[in-house]
Image (tube, rainbow, N blue to C red; front, side, top):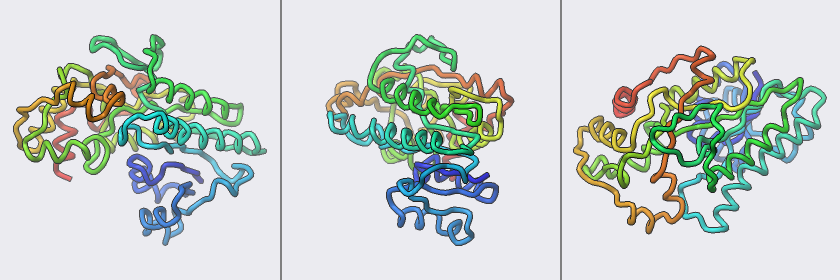
Length: 304
């Protein structure tokens, strides 16, 4: 397929392109031409990856699929009013631009896969099971971001274009993502659960993330929301103990709720609360997870 992709230099986008560049032709949308060339130098040389200026496009007639992963990192900075606006507009504006280009196309892409997150469900209790049919949302900022993001993406839906909403959980990868922030303290034996540790972490190994994304791209009867989470969510405490074990380090400390609030402000909610999210659509459509349980996933990542 000929795919236009945003957010390609991020954790998921980069892993997806590296795995499937021989199978697809990627046109990468980015604010930085040099970053694209640096990140995908080998694939650029072979012509499998090209830089694309979204502002110069008048339609998407030449593309078979859109994969929209762009967005300001949500936990890297405190949620000031300015940062909240940046988090939102970095997702909403580029999604609206892609939708408008779809509408301007006489032959729009057949597949429009657009980023979202399990944050759309809002915080839930540890015993509440959440799949794609769940509607008892908790209203908070993470939900506001994702709901508007999804609503914009759904405008691209037509008889010619199916829209899938990629509700992504905590992505575990050897470099970057959640483990990138956890690695140093845990490697020093200073890691541990956050607050009570009872909050549920719905995670997914990066290999399953990209393979499941390809599965959704190729499975044309999948539409609407898709949870990208492993079938066995765990508590924050279980994840912390498993990660420490994979690094052969103790798990003796706890991050106090008060300290996290002081450090992160409102964005601490993302670590203090969770959701028990299950991948109903992926499982029912025949996707088989390579990593279903946390110990195996983290042990494999520790070797990379």
